[in-house]
Each structure stands twice: as structure tokens, then as C-alpha cells.
Image (cartoon, rainbow, N blue to C red; front, side, top):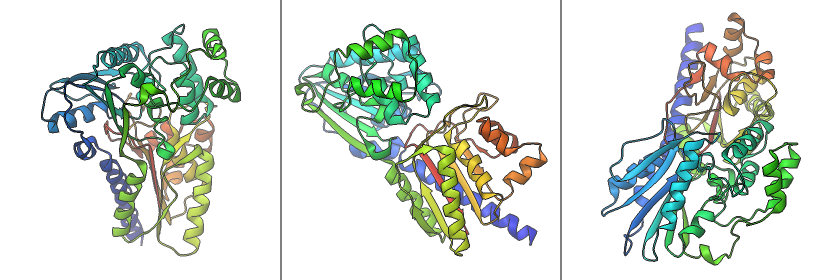
Length: 428
């Protein structure tokens, strides 16, 4: 019986990883960029872009475009790929650095160089907010870094964080598109945000911004953040508002979504159904505190288990962590640890929680990125055997150390795409 149970757990763990890999594959640039390319322009093709998928998107463009091109994109350190015509720049994520500021200035230069018969192609994906770090006039990179760190630790949603970022930037919130006018501008975007709002993906550098300086001030106040004085003055002055819907400078800008979290879940659904599971899809737009959502999902899983059902509970979105401890980890590993604690070793449930970009918050002790973690019926038992107290690790926000010690962290390396979090719970 023990061997049968072990084999069953192994099979379920293999399926969990297969579901995650299937989800990631739907958003790989080589699979979604070629079918979305536009006709050649009358004059130049100027390529710009930012995000964790930017280098892979640039390479996919080069592999399938017939004609000359030039430009530059910026991606996260370690996510670069060799390209022939498009320059690939790298910068820090999630806290911006000087390389990100230089990259943003390069994108501004490229946009301003565009003529009326040129096509500016912007390759956009999640992570672009940190990678395009051009502070608004009167602000410094250090100002933006301080606010970014405070927002990331506050539990603010990605939409709230990006609202503030747009109003501290010289490039976000439609400003890049305004700089390229009157050239035609086409954005090809891989969505990493709940609801696929174009203004929220990388803080919307090429689309109108429906938010205001007042909204940004309200978010700072909501989370009791004390920003640098220059930031406070900038937000209060509320000068040079971002381009709004109807702005004539955006009339030549087109936005095309080429990969979405919903498609990721659809692909995983088909894979789970082939394995004999009925799928409960909770949607691609979940937000909230990771440990709270985990407790809700544990209750749902146990209810299905008690009903004798064989189901796969799938969800996407972007969870948050309000940091109170000094440990390592990220929202997906914190969710996984909280889920394991809530399930208390129930042998009917296993789960995986990973970020599709391959990087969930803080890296492991060796500095390597971790995508997330898997849990099973023996997670807490094995932890106790190693002297780990799951409850204390959760209280210290140390899910990273917990799963690294157990060997249950999921390490993929750079996936070079990003459609946000992926979670799967198998109940059998």
C-alpha cells in the first residue's frame, strides 16, 4: 500500500509540473509573435520593447520578419538572447537600476526619431515597469527605487503599484506613444495582469492612462508610505498629467494582445482533462494576500475531496505578500506553504504554485531564481523531520527557505515570458 501511495503521489507531481509547463508554453514568444506580425511599413521598422519576454519576442520577430529593421529592447538580467539587428539591453527587476534608466532613455530616443511613414513596433510584456525607469522631471532614480521597494513590501496590488509608477515616469502611461506621434505605433503585448488591462501591463507606456495624480496620492496614503520629499512634491503639484483617452497624440497607436493568462489556463485545463480530472477554473484574475487565498483554496479542495470528486482546481492572477518577517520567498511559495498548513497533510491533495516567468520573489540562498513550489501529503511531515516549523516560516515570510530545505522548490530558469501566477490543486 505504501508503494502504491508513493507511486500515486509521483504521478500527481509529474502531472502538476506538466500542467505548469503547458501553461508557460502557450505564452512563449516563438509561439505567439509570428502569427501577429503586421505588414511592412512604407519606410522604416523601428523596434522598441520592454519586459521579461522582450528578448525572446525580438528574436521571434527577427526569425519571421522579411525586411530591414533596427531598434532596441530591454529585458531582465539573465533573460537576454542573441539577436542580429535588434539591440538587447538588460536591467534590474523588480527594483529599477541605472541600466533601466539608460534603457528607457534609449526607447525615448527611438520613439522621437520616428517619421510619419515609419512603424514603431513595441514588444511589451510583464516586468516592463521596472525595466523602463525614466524618472519624471525633478525626480531621481533613487526616488523611484525607494517608492518601488515600499510598494512591493506593502501588499499593494500590481494595478496600484503601476498607477503610482505611471505618475513618477517620463515614459509610462502613454507617454512613449505620444513621443512617437505622428508615426504609426503598434504594440504586441503578452499580458501579465488580472483582467488584461493594457494600461496596467508594464504601466502602459503606449496606451492612454485613465488614472490621475490624485489616484496615485490616494494609494500612497492607503498604504501609509512615506516617500522621498521630491516624490511628495511631484504628486501634489500634479503637473504634466499622463495622456488620457481621446488624446490626439495616441490616434496612430494600436494595441494587440497576443498572449493572455486565460489562454494559459485553457491549455492547462485541456491537459488536466486528458488526465481524467474535472477542472474547476477559478479564473485568471485572482488578487489578494497569498496566505488568505491559500486558506480559501484549501477549504475548497477539502470540500471536493469529502464529496469524493476527482478535480483539478486551476487559477491565475497575481497574489501579494505583506512583508512582516525577514525570510525569503515570494507570493507563490508563500501561497504553497500556507496551503500545506491549511491542508494538514491530507493525502487526497497535492498542488503547485509558480510564477510563469520563472522568478517568484527573492532567489534561493545561491542567488538562483525560483519559480515556485510543490506540496504534497508529506510536506509538513518531512519538514518536521528536518526541524522546520511551517507556521514559524510562514510568520517570518520564509517560504523560500522552507521549500529550498525540502527540495520542493520549482526551478525552471528564465522562461522568457510572463503571464503571471499559475496554481493547480489536484484532488483525488
